[in-house]
Length: 263
Image (cartoon, rainbow, N blue to C red; front, side):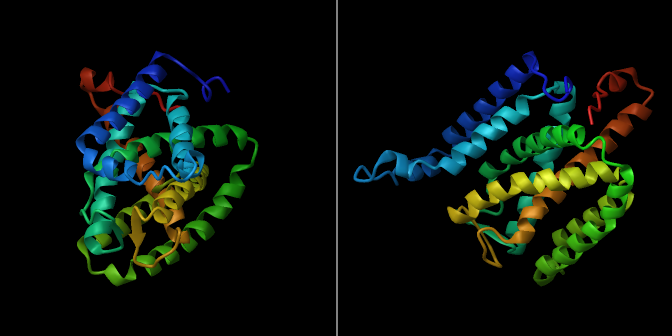
């Protein structure tokens, strides 16, 4: 378990960067934060007005991203998640699959949450991979297509009204590529599971607070929960392509950037 539960100077740096990002978001989008603070009612006990789910999500992810932190791994992983999160948010808001209360398409203040969530999922995945190491590979191979086949049906059902939108077509192609080219079935299923688990609490917070609303309704809709898991797999999949490109390069400066694949 040493590689799973590991704290270093990088862990301290990462939590510092995380807090800095939170501060910058609060500073740049102060009007939104001020509106939220103004909701405080002095006639109601403070403990009843504290958003415990938001605090819980914040604390859990703050802890997770510090475990086994490695800048050579985490920086490119976070940038991939940042870019992917922007594309996903643009797809959803431009196509009308979901809407934020600010009606931005997409709201830039939500995009930094994607790398934080992706790194948190990565840490959970490493933990569960260790805990399930004695489960035979054949069980994961046998469960792979039934699970992802079911996901594909739910995905098509969810995006059907926007099937002609270019970003919907792009999303479907990426999902198909990820599902059909992934050889590490165990890894994909574990990431789907832990990504969906974390995604539930994030979606529960966002939909019940009306921060964002899906066209289907729901607090949250079931599909959007497992979609978090699929998005996490996509980030992991692109990251492995990035590592593969660096590994095949003959340029020394590129090979120095090759991260340790702790998965």
